[in-house]
Length: 179
Image (tube, rainbow, N blue to C red):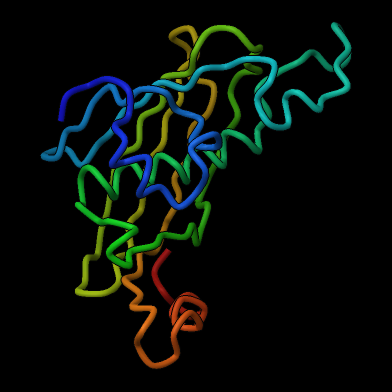
């Protein structure tokens, strides 16, 4: 893997339209450390940011917290693709299950990019289901602006299997799974 813009194969496998990937460059993949790092441009036309009723003092335009939370899901997909070798087109899909902790440390005005890191801190990998606890750190102008620990479940779903698409819903709806 060479750092740089995401390739067409990755973008074709993404379960969302590439416009909401939010990242424009893959900066690092460290399989041994189970870590990825990406660059996230910040600009006034980002979803939610463009819809803000901004005021220079009371509510300055900023990268919305909801966007940062969504970005963690996209980073989790980057991690699953490049570190765990999971492919959406092969039936793998991931969903966030728990936010153990999250902190917004700095209001981020549009302009300078965010550098976002995702590292798996714990994983239980099975044949058709993986549970992964991630640690996220987002830096803006060298200062931490967001950090969290979150858990995701990755499921391999065969659309032709008994239960078909309901398989995802049934597999996801589980009480007592580790967070």
